[in-house]
Length: 432
Image 1 (cartoon, rainbow, N blue to C red):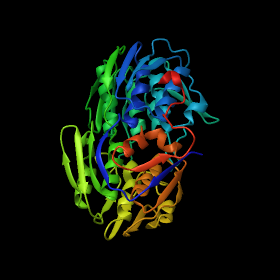
Image 2 (cartoon, rainbow, N blue to C red):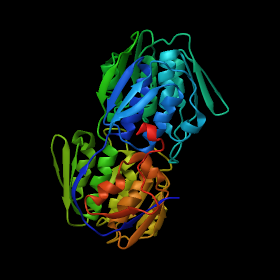
Image 3 (tube, helix red, strand yellow):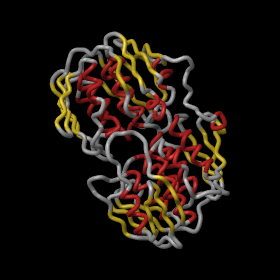
């Protein structure tokens, strides 16, 4: 198992470029299956989840390769299979997006139920119910979903207003883009990553109204066409570095970022005493003192993102006073708390709430990452801690963060990967 070692206690100073969004790019790669030609997608991060999705597309018969460092060419003219391989789907939940795309274009999809990070129950019931409402026959046997339809027909689909499922919204949009008639999705997710997928489909010829709202209206078209499209910056990566600087102290500027997608996060940082400046595509944070205590509750966009909740807990661990962090989306998101407590944090869990009593400092310790965002929180903690922190299970980090060590080294962190060979995020040289 690979590890990262961090010698903490060093303020962060300098500039960090933000990569393209993992959570936006995965739906875009699936949506490219809908195009019977070539999709050129720019600003795609070279991370393990993207490479796994590329393997998935190739297994379906798609020609897929990077033609520039962050530009992916996808030709889905000749799909040879409608069945997604289990060993690829189990790697990450985002692979389930191919179900809606295959069903929408071919009227048939066979996809194993997905795996990914262990952060709580994330059922695909909303996806399957949406497929059924569009007229598909869906069967689940031995962990595999098989959906078929002679013809998909538009429907009025009302989703759970408390959950606003990102994945279900995307899958229903993909399935309905070529369906006959009009599909209305009420309580649709408004996450920037969903909007990005909507814009991609629109650029490829889909008829979508209500983009960015919670009522999306899709009128089916006969066919989509070739498209060139740029994915959005990764707001979770950006938020991680912003919180890291706010906790470890220093002065960093993020470039190629999108401040509008992080309004609530930036407001929270201002509230704890961090100086925040923004421009069209940059964010600067500065601080030389301990943060103030705060309260935060995760919620669908535009609320505070659940993916940044573990990082916020590190900020609370070092705050002056007692912070309260409530998780409303994933029921196992606090699996990092014991690891932070090993580093000297004072976190008490009460059901879905973490009570965090701030301490003056954290201390380096051996800790284990259990998912992508828990891993990033341990990196943030290691940057702040006195002494050395060794994080194992860092394979999770390479699923979601591009050039993590290089970017942190560039702003003065003492961090390195503790194995024989550097990690470049690739499993398949052809996908590079």
